[in-house]
Length: 451
Image 1 (tube, rainbow, N blue to C red):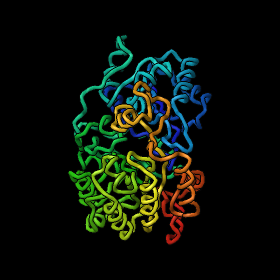
Image 2: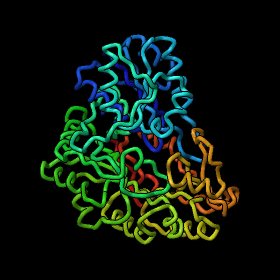
Image 3: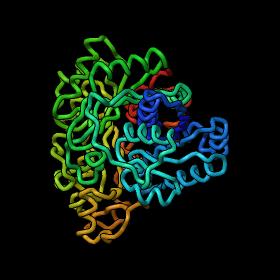
Image 4: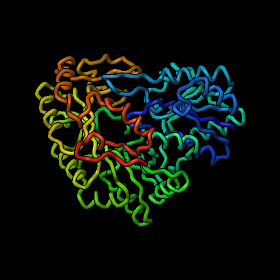
């Protein structure tokens, strides 16, 4: 079967990332004997005409659309992405008779509503490698599912999670937009953050890929595509089970080094561990602090407190890691007093960048959705497809926005709203600067060298 896979993602904040899920589905289909072409709405400059031309030229039997994000989860500058998917499906109908299948993390959160909203034929819920291969194999025989929603299937063991099939055209586009390529080392999340969907999407148990296979992916990206920077896309890189250290040790054993960044949680790191990671190229950290004081950290389901955030920040920064934190104000348990305490805590962090969010996107199936219903923030029957945000009933929205604006106005390393620097960073990426570049916002750091 000729299969066209389209990434519908248009998110470029804080930098564009190669659609690795699409690549993993492509690899599974190609390994099963199907002909696969990957394309990308961003690559086509979000042009429906260009996308339509590509569909017409390739003439696929099946078209899969990856829905990574429903919206941009930014209360201050909300953008809703399902309309893009709907428009892509409409364009497909104009130029092709191919069956249209939706999938991806965003789709799996609210599958029935998104399928109805977009008018696609089918939707794959959860991990798509096995399900898409089964769909394509059956379609080749003229057999299609009786029901439009497919799955979920049992989650794959870690050692069966394969490498991404990187499309050279798309990868070069993403490398030119920041030189960051993406790799997944494991799936699953054992943590209990009240807003997060990773446990329901990937399971609560870690499923580790073979570290040698991960390092082979790194070599492949460096040697074949000249990638200069890696983003490990795991929900949390430095997991409590130490799977990340197996990857780091394998990189050291094979003498593989490349600048890289990842999502880092406070706790568990030491100077010795960070120095070991640094030998492999560890250059930047995105710390999921999320809340800014002990009261709200506890209410958010975090297993650490602000002193752990401070310790993590100090360890990373004194070892030369460009460090960023993400803080959300308006959490469960938030009051005017915790807001003031949180602001003081954020401002006390040294040599790092803080991205400040107001409100939390409520997603179905999360503890936060139950909290929001219990507190009367949302009605129980709300489907949550369109963006809805949690804001503590104990804090007035206008007061919170004014307070955050006043507190962080003119503070170079604290961004509120969080997308305040997006345009500048994108311009620098297009000029050839590589990586996340948090250090541009730190006055004591030098400007990054041109790639």
